[in-house]
Image (cartoon, rainbow over all chains, first blue to last red; front, side, top):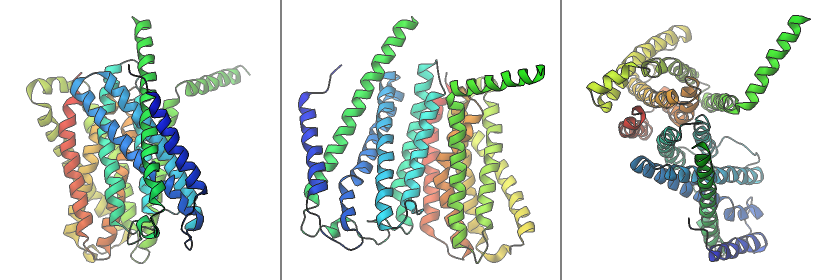
Length: 226
Length: 222
């Protein structure tokens, strides 16, 4: 099994270090209401990009499992869903922090907030389904892959289609401008794009590590049982 | 004192089992959270429609609870032994379509009855809004409930907790569509036909129908 190459760590250190240092200390455009909270762009938005990417990989590996019937792919799908869930929770928390200072409340029932919360609920049902099988690995993998495919389609409906049909206070929705309007001199995107690449890369590497751990655990259990 | 000791022993036994099998507790927690969230979404809509009454929210909450109760009866309890015989006769997709159509028919009758009872109890005028459109929305909502709860019944049948898991797995999947149904009927009550919302409802029905056709063969084979 291939381990993570050293230069991946180096690149990640550079990208995320750059994001943290310049994202927290660098110059940002001073705007009314938003103020310093505009720095959330480097930490909140990449979380959602990362979550969708990781859930997409999880969905792909679920399809691979159903095609090949090898539980290797199912473990990979599980690992990616785990990291995606972590990103979702972090995204929700950073979003709530941002909302406290701009909308006035941590939770104001905005369509975007609601659909993100429901998306996390769907994936927590996926984990519950996973824990409710104990012995039959093949059956567990099959049921989980089916549920994962359903969950991915519903989360696409939730995150990309539903909030667009209703009025929302979230930037980039319902007539509210996205970040492009605030980015007057193009200084935001010099940190925003590296931040997206860094966070997604970090997520994929972490998911692969969890996958390796799950594979080793599976091998150990399998040898002890037989 | 002797009985008191026995009660105490049994109580502690249940507690330790609960901690050991934490999935049972956490699944009921997820169910609880989803139910609270549905009510939360409903209250938002109810606040918007204070001048026309908010029976639509209550109607859809009733329909969700009724379908959680009824749909597993046709799917979960029918997948014990007899399906093996059916699967030797027909393709699994054919079995699935027939089952879904029958359950939709039954649930449609029940929902008409619910609608009638709502009409009698809430005194709302039936010609208040576009009734044919309301029935289209009703059919869309019920078809979606049957498809999702049917699939999760088959998923739950294989899992350790059985019947309980149908609702736990199904409700989060149904939640976005329930929000959509709240909104669509809210617009209909105000006399507005929102073609985008109705189109999205139908679109999600079509997507989940084809997905279920693709995924069902994986669910029944052992």
